[in-house]
Image (cartoon, rainbow, N blue to C red):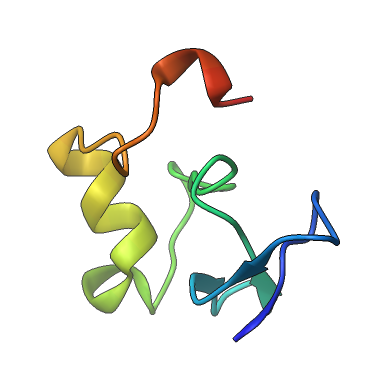
Length: 63
């Protein structure tokens, strides 16, 4: 568990392994969706983004 890159006061389990940063549910978006990432097939951030899941939050709260 770590602190969100954009919200240092928020603890999160979601980590971008490519960039080695933590992202909270509101920030959890793939930073390089069009570039190769060897972690993408096992990435929960990419999976949830592809499936259209909103992480149980209001879309207006996302950046």
